[in-house]
Length: 307
Ligand code: HSE
Image (cartoon, rainbow, N blue to C red; front, side, top):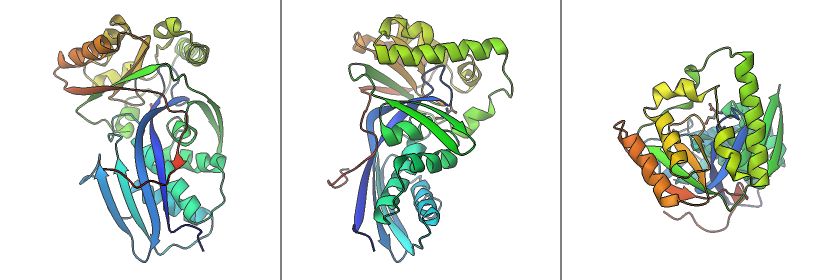
């Protein structure tokens, strides 16, 4: 028996890698999807917002797969689910939409079925489903997260993200799947490139925590994934350069792209205009907006899903 008939969860978007922190660093953002889940005799799905008409309405829906996984893991039989999801996170743009779905499904089912799993256990299941922890961790815990994975154990250290930082988000009109963006990565990297990235990943995290914005553009540099992904995202390198030239403290490909994010505390108008114009010079149409880091992570909410 559940103490709830229906559970609503609000899950933040996230930006992963932050330049050099490939598969390790993540930051939750103030953009949300909402999941409403209840038990039913047969499964039904309603989707509004991003992905409406595109996302699966049956058992292959990622939220339902995560909910089924939670039921299986806690030894419970569920005849069906009623799922209502309202999405504001664009799909396949590098803003953690699949992680938000997985985290939403796991938290909602855990609450509904009184599964009793804690957030660390949910992180481990979510990481296994997603394949890497750097979007699911900020979606679950909020803030700035650093993760590593050893077999099935996920070590995640969460820090409060600096709310004074504005995050400029520039989203090209086309999609890039994470699978596609991982296929272009090399199987091996040089010792020099490994050291280049690990030193900059450490500096990026330390600079964000210490508020040392002036070092961000120098340290948010990457040799492991962005150069390889440039072939999938026309103008990516120029958009990052344009952001920094216009006054951003640093900029990077968001997760596996194609979105580019910029970190700023001033010059916000000129930064986004410069980034959109740089994409435009490669004939890439892009939308843009500013958001803030989110420090709450996924939360169970009372209010109805708003459209
Ligand atoms: N770290 C992952 C990648 C994030 O870059 O492939 C996917 O959003």
